[in-house]
Image (cartoon, rainbow, N blue to C red; front, top):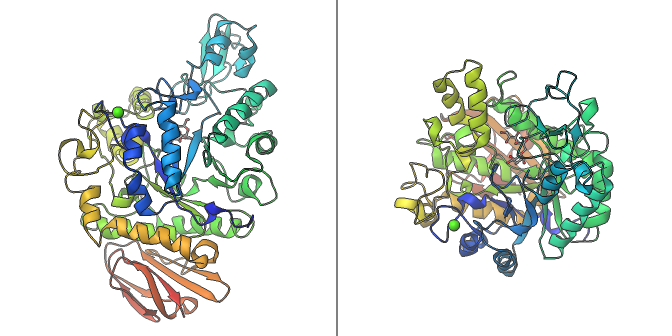
Length: 545
Ligand code: TEU
Ligand code: CA
């Protein structure tokens, strides 16, 4: 049924290839390593993998800087390995969703090398060039996301180019129709290889109007997305997920409204950026505020309701580990990791599990700047030190929010290398790997993995989980997230405590009743009403009779 495509009942799993599984001992995860772990994913029951970039790349941004869109980075394997991954995954009912990074390329892409060598090259206009300011300086004082100026001077052509993220990631000029045609061609080439869709990196930036200073959700964004669908996605049974740091409930339906002909869903970050400091940004995080998180999630559930579709996630490769941010990664690690899983996976939308989340991996919490690898962290460190921030203060913030927190190697088993590598890993393995690893968690019938497996199965099997209408209850309750899902005659009550202490909770009338316990991290409850006492981080879903 066209209104019930496969991805509405599927759970996604994000792989960050560099840190997933290393098959040849060079310390870098690779595609043969992923193939060797496919049974872990099929045991979990996921429907598709979002594969972070594996294309040829100088790896300034770990692959989010692509120098050849039609080849695989040698450290990750070969195109044949990737084809094998696609078919071996398909044999297990798992689709491979590729990361499409087309707001920018690498500065080492052949297009850019031609573009910077001569203003007469046809590829010159594939990028964004501007004249120097009268004083010879950059055209504007725009800062790059990863530190420094967004403009870089090229002597050969006597102009500056735009690198909104970094100089190693020059922005592609989407205004050029030949560039767009080249991208459609490349996308179709991948789709014809049998992939299950695309996750589209910072897609909300492609319609920018540089001279007006409008970057996010610029004037041409939706025209380009509609053209993209016509030229590539239309008529194919695939999923498309756009990443947007600016999308709000007000603009979300423009991307994924049923009749828009654009994308299937967006990754939104309202629940993330609200925790950042207004002035100092992510490296000075604010304490977690549950009522605010509930408001954001509920607003998205309600706005996208019947017309759009939500993506559901707390963590990815750009964000710290969810159990360390929203849960408690000490004594209550297992309970709070399961609680977060239940709270998120019982919502309406397509959930994403980020590698290691299914065993409750925690923040790396590096204590020395030398332990960091991510150029976002290292460049901001330089910037902030120049602005007078001490190393100690910077590292304190980074240990909470830096991207490397979630990029340390997957912890497969105890022992040196954690089953990730037999060599020296490209980034330090989390010190807790001997205690927290896949082998240990999966050996435990009460492990976190089992809770995820149950949640993934519930979405496949229970229409109310996939399609039920969402309603928030007890909105102002400071430490409990409570909601219902309704479909036809079926009612699901979901309650999750975010507190490390027991809490008294007055079950709202609309949630009360008796039924079947679907999933819980505590003693099963079959009935709820009146005042109940929730155990620390207790969470459950009951299907009411
Ligand atoms: O992220 C987009 C983005 O805006 C983030 O870089 C964000 O600002 C940052 O991570 C906050 O810490 C995407 C990719 O997911 C990210 O890994 C890439 O570095 C980035 O685009 C550039 O391609
Ligand atoms: Ca390797």
